[in-house]
Amino acid sequence: MSKPLDGINALNYLIGKQPDITLYRNLSIVVMDVLCSLVLPLIRHNFGERFFSIFWVTIMMIATLLACWYWQVNYTIIGIYMGVLFTASLYHLFVIIRRNRRDEIWHSRYEGDSNFLWVFRHLPKGNQLTWAEGLYEPLIVLIVASLLSVFVDSGLAGIFAVSAMCLAIRARIRHYIWRQGIIDDRDRMIESEGMLSALNGVPAGENNGLSVMDAGFLKPNEKRAKAKQVLTPEMFAEHFPEPPKDFSSSVTTTH
Image (tube, rainbow, N blue to C red; front, side, top):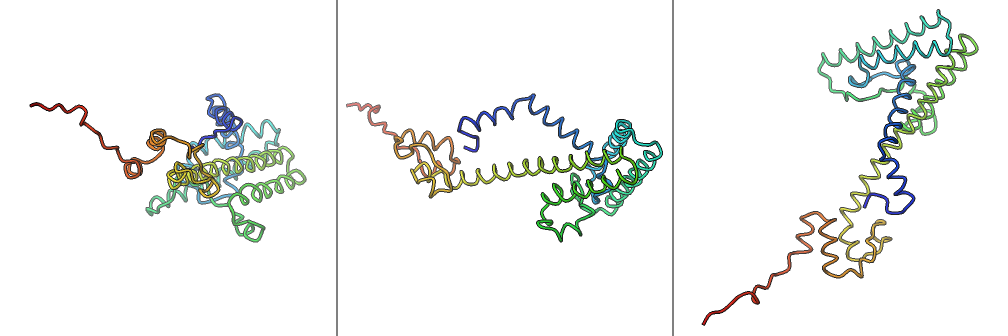
């Protein structure tokens, strides 16, 4: 039931499941992750161990070198920028090691708290992660990019500007994936709670939008077949018990 039944959304669902589409989508997320990593150690803290890993730091430093080469950043600025990134990364790794030695429980995939939460709380919807990570955080990075363009290096400013854009897009993708998961869970809850009513012909408007087409016109054997497919075994056994079997015709009497 949670899969789309209408033509257009069913087509969209099938396209999204294609291996090539999935591959390109995942590759685009990887690219955005890499570009976000160029500023992430400077704007967040409290990373999880498996998120902020040695591998992640290595990829970040390589990507930083390539980005600086592409945007033709001044060599002195490159050294300073990479030194700041490396120092920040060492600090985050130290926090993770200290947390482990203290046996503190922390989610290993956590992507960190923004260093500017104290500012976001005073802004509209600043307490919501979607707004904080998808709007305010990229906006701050963009402001920094503008200042770098005027006072430091235009190439480094370009890196920060692209990173700001990727932060915003990545936050929207994360929100979309999270929202789809929530909607799927909600639909499954509605189906589990209202499927019996839907099979009994209760209108969708009275059943949280759930209906079974022409349920009122289903023959008993058709309703039973549909119920066995969509109901839990316990609900099916309770509401559609096996009909009594009549063996009288097959019983032979002897005289």
